[in-house]
Length: 185
Image (tube, rainbow, N blue to C red; front, side, top):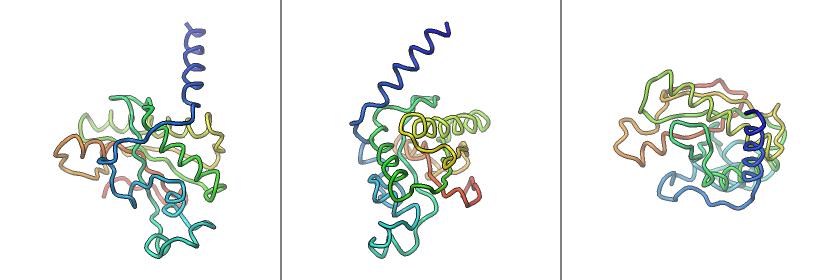
């Protein structure tokens, strides 16, 4: 049994290491300041770096302490879907580029469906899954990343009117690690 699990894990890691995947659909996650999609925008949003100094005034003046990543997961699972690999690779570029050596917290969130305890555990597993992807597959130093979860305590859309709002609520956020974890609005 163990031998089969190891084989499947190695095959999954080999598949995850393949470089080119598309991002989630554009209609979801359309706010470029909340959901940056390019490494340079991620660097602008998460803090002053050498590239931020030349950023447009709106971006460079007060960078947010939190940005959301539209990471897609299998239903009720921490398995990252392949359509999320493209955006995760942009975070890899940012963490190896202008954000290298800085500490960040990866925070998982869920939609409003399901119980509080289940969603809290699921959000923590999802954040850990993203951390594992960044560390194990792409070589980000683990001491610069921590993970946590908020469950359904911090919905972007409440009430959720449809699948678009639920998708945006099911997200992973990157926060500066020197700020306290806040769940809820």
